[in-house]
Amino acid sequence: WCEVEGQSFNPPVSTIISQILVVPMRGGSTDEAAVDMNIEKLGKVLDIYEERLSKSKYLAGDFFSLADLQHLPHTHYL
Image (cartoon, rainbow, N blue to C red; front, top):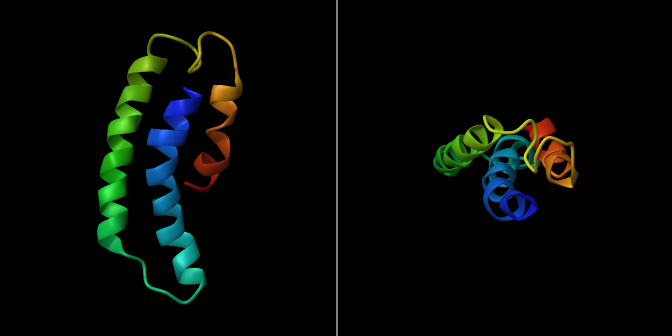
C-alpha cells in the first residue's frame, strides 16, 4: 500500500493540490482540465481503497501502519 500511495494516489493528489492551491498563490491560473483529469484518476484509486477498506480496518490489515500514515500529508490538504 505504500507503493500504491507513491504510484497511484500521490501523483493525482499532488497535481490537484498544486493546481488549486500553489499555482494561484504564485499568480497563475488553475488548469481546470488538469484538475478534472486528476480528480477522475483519483476517483478510480479511491474506489480500490474503498474495496480494500471494506475488508480490513486499515490499508495493511487490522492495525494502523506506515501505509496509512503516508497518506495523511496530502489528504490533509485535499
